[in-house]
Length: 477
Image (cartoon, rainbow, N blue to C red; front, side):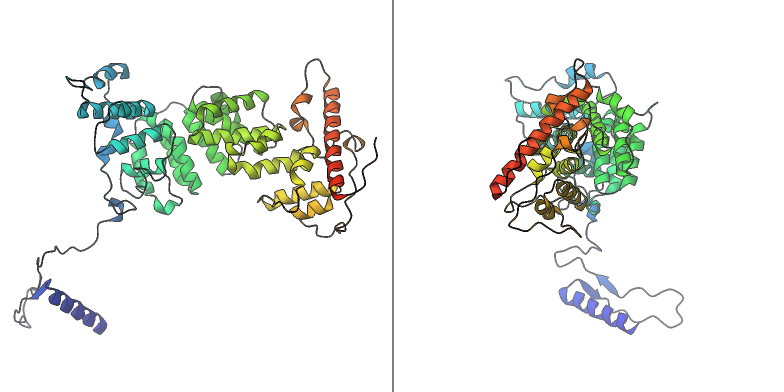
């Protein structure tokens, strides 16, 4: 109590010295008074500042300290009427220019907001480009249009608003998601999402759920999924996509039949469903169909540069590896740089020996890619099986095996055709395109041809390695 009294006296003294407090000088109350004493200290409004109890709440400020935009500036549900859209478009686009073709600010704002409420991001941007009218919300509208088109805007007008206690948090998370859930006002995001029109919930929901899964928050991702099916008679395609991502996060198989059905549909939902289906197949060690691989390639061309394009590109790259097209899988790193480890894993598990020799036997001066320990061990085990002890040790040192002397090249492996009906890691999914089965060629003959081609490539690779180290060439035949 003594310490508290001393602290209070010191603070009042500092306040009095600064002119913020004054002592009223009233006499002390009598000891038998029935009413509590009136305070004899009053807070002064002078000199020139207002006394407040605390700083503005953090949820009313952006991460940069600016005031958060009001919800009215994001109220897409109020930007369209209840009549059919076809009837509204004419009225919304009327009056964009005046008597002398000069752009009119208010009709333009009304038309842009109307397009945004429908999810027409590209059309909204076209209007803004055609009629360069100054408006306080022009930057926000353009950023929202990019979000609706599946594009992110790091550092854009919506950035740093994820902690706001309103609709700004939702659009900020979609435009420039923070790296941590600590920087997100999750309740505000969920409230704003639930208030969107049903069609916009279907469009934005899977992406929003994916963000929460990336933040390791499956509970809020599930809440997004529940909002997607609210009022629907059966699960919507967006809910199915979210179900697939939730299943993947739990380590479960995605709903393959539903994804296959949705993947046949045109548009973003079909592309995302096919990408999720193929990723699930690859994770289970299955090879996608040739038609699905072709479809993913075409979809990537249509979606390149968007968030969806990144997901489709990743699935396409994995599909190329899983079907044996390692040349394009490795050379197509720009499709999805984050898929490197998975492409190497597929090579280590099911790639043919010829590709293993071409990709995994590297000069000692060339650094190895950063891969999980399980993949490095699998590559090393296969290289040792081929007699390439030194290269294997670079990937994963042997625990008990003795490495080959540095001045002696490793012995050549047994050719694939002498090892039995198939070489290690070779299956139907990894056969080269030239060896694909056709109705007129028996499968056994097709496979034999593929093995011969693979053996020839492996032998040539080994000869090149031995020649480079001055070793003895393997005998012909």
